[in-house]
Length: 374
Image 1 (cartoon, rainbow, N blue to C red):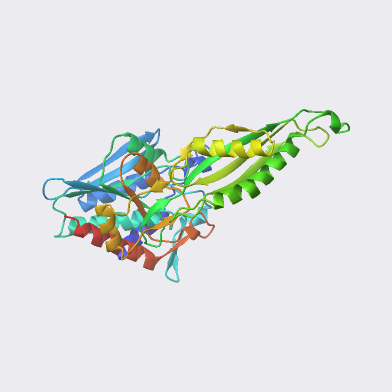
Image 2: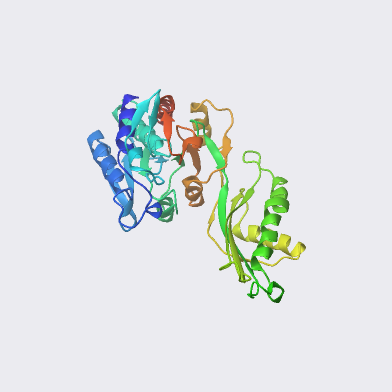
């Protein structure tokens, strides 16, 4: 367990901020230094394969694997992500106090990286090395922004019998998570002088009615549809932009909304129901298309999922509200679950931390599961 703590301290000290959150050419940007550090550690541990999968220029997924003693009959993928959100410089100086390790990424998800990688190395050293199961560790790029890493891996045709995607779940196995869809809605009006507003049509006023409808009637409508693990979908109006200055009637207004989706919902179905609601209330707005981050729903009755649940001491799986790489991998044909040490409430916070008891539990639990594989 000391190995996981030591590794996590080293990982936190290596900035790997997603470039989307930093100015161009910022020295803290990108996952490469963490990927190269893990590659060095993998070679020291004698893992069977160490390599990189180019995702976009200057950014790669890191891959390493442990081959079975005999013929490969199944493949397990361990898939935490290497990038973090932005941080102040002092957050890259890991501090341990009161049984917690503080620092950017400690929880989301360098804690999972440390637990998964340490577990893999422990299995490599064990006499109980799996006979017919290949274990692959993939440190993924870009989860915090566009999921380019998991999308590249899925699009490459990579196959596995189960992916365990690292996120802070309190070391509980998650088989379902919500999807995420960002939409832009626009209202149009007619510009006029602020002294004669009756000569124009105020696009901001029209949008105010749309916002109220989304946050009241639409939110209520969503609460009527429930998923057994995920509850109901949600909508949040996150930004509004409209008008030029106070003495001009605004002819255009735009909002961005965050729509958390349930399994089975699509971009088309969400856009249709919003448009239907607007028509019902005699409101008009255009809805721009956007990429859907799909929801995850993995059958907990699948044999490997059942085995992992048993190893975790769970009688039933859980669901979570947030989106992650698991749904991307599942969309590519890889049955996926989410698991990792830590509490999602600490992710992205100014004083991010992980309890070392969680880190140790996650490492031990995953090691035990991997050693039980045939």
